[in-house]
Image (cartoon, rainbow, N blue to C red):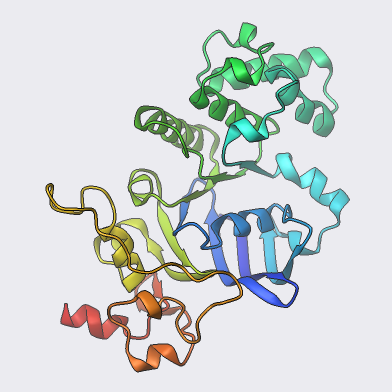
Length: 321
C-alpha cells in the first residue's frame, strides 16, 4: 500500500527553482534511499514533504499525497496535526535539534501530550517505553537526563524515539548517521530496520553513502543539482547503474579503488543553485557527454523494468561498455 506519493514537486527561491520534477512513491514497510552529493536537494525535498521549508523558499508546484491528503494544500493548523502523528522526521545533527535546557523526558512527552492529550503519568510511561524500544538502557532513570549527558549515538536514538512518539506510519530520516562512528552508525541502521519490521514503518532515508543504501534500502533515487537522475530497485541500480552520475558515485565509494591507489573523485563541482548549466546538469563533469547533452534537459525514461534514468545516451553507452 502506497502511503506517500509525490508528483512533480518543485521548490523555488523567488522565481529560481532549486528542486524540480521530483516524483516518488513510498509504500508501507519499504525503505527508500535518496542519495547524492551535498547540495543535490535531498534535505530540501524532505523539508518540503514536512512543510518545514525556510520562509524564503516555497513549493512552486506539485502534489504531496499522504494517506490520500495533499499536504501541499493543507493549512498550517492541519500540518501541526499531521507532523508527528502521520509523518515523523529525524533531523541531521541531533545536538542542534535537542533543547539543551529540557530533559529528554520533557522533549518526548511534549508531543504525546500535545497530540493525544495524555496525562503526565501516561505520557511519561510511554516515553520510557519508547526509550526502551530504541535501545537506551535503564530508560526510567535516563528520562530525567539532559542531552549533554548522552553520547552522540544515544542522542540520535532519542531523536528516533521523539519521531515515533505518536506512532506515525512514515518516517523521514535525513542523514541519521552523520558524524557517528562506524560501529554506532551500524547500530542506528539496525535499529531503523528493526522498527520497520516491528511497526510496519515506511522510511525515506536520505544519505550520501551508497554503502548505507546497500545495507538498508529497497529502492534508490539518485539526485543531482535538484533533479532525480536515476531511480530503481537497489540491487539493480548498484549492480548496473544506468546514469553516468550514479556510476561515478559508485566509483568514489571506499573499497572501489585499488588498495594502494587514491580514492577516485568526480572532477569539478556541483553547480550552485540558480546557476545550473543548459542541457543535462551533469554534462560539465560527465566523461561521456556529447554535444546533444549541452542542449536539451533530459527527463526520466524507462531503460528496463522498474528502472528510469535521465540520460538519453544510457542505452548506447551501456551497450558499448
